[in-house]
Image (cartoon, rainbow, N blue to C red; front, side, top):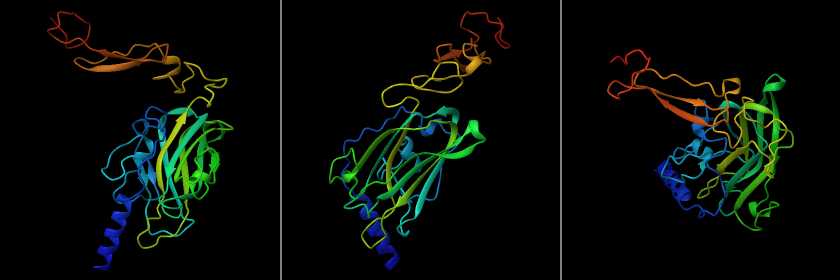
Length: 264
C-alpha cells in the first residue's frame, strides 16, 4: 500500500507541474531524433517519459514536450543522454530549454554539459558547452528573474566535426515525498551556423557535411542521379544540396524505360 501511495504521489506531481511557458525550441534543427542512427541512450528516464522528447519528439501523453529523468536519486546525480547522427556535423550554436517546479530542487539541474567526439582528432571527446543554472532558473543571465524557465542559446566557442554526442544534467535536489527530483529537459537544438547567421569558413554545399539550410550533402556524389528499381523510388542529392525524389516507370504508364521489368 505504501509503495502504491508513493507511486500515486509521483504521478500527481508530474501532472501538476508548472504550466508551459512560451519557449522557442526548433523542430527543424540538426538534432531531430529522426536523424539519429538509433534511439538515444540514457542513464534512465521516468517510466511515463521518452528521451526522444528532447529531440523533437511528441510521443507520450504525459509532458510530451519534455523528458523527465528518473526520480529517487540523490542530489548531484549525473543524468545523461548520448546519441549519434546519421551524418557528420559541425555544430556552431545550440539551444537548451528546461524548467523546474517551485524551485530547482524539484526537476532542476545545477549543471548542463555538452560533449562531442571530435572526428578530426581521433574521436577524442571534447567539451563543447557548459552552464551552471541559477535557482530559480530565471536568475540565470538572459532569462526572466524569478521564473522557473530556462531558455539558453549560445555559440560554440570551438566547433568540431562530429556525429556522436553526450549531454550531462546534474540533478539539483534530493527526492522528497510529494516532490519530483529527476530533471525535466524540454529540448536540445543544434545549428550549423553561429547565432548571427555566420556559417564559418567551411560552410558550403559539397563538403559532405549537412549544414543548415541544406537538405542533404553527399559531397562528390552531389548531382549524381539515383536509379530506382522497378516500381520503386529513391532520392538523390542535387549539386545545390536539395533532395529530389525519383520514381521508376511502371508497366502501364505509356513510357518505355530501360529498367528490367518494364517491358512492353
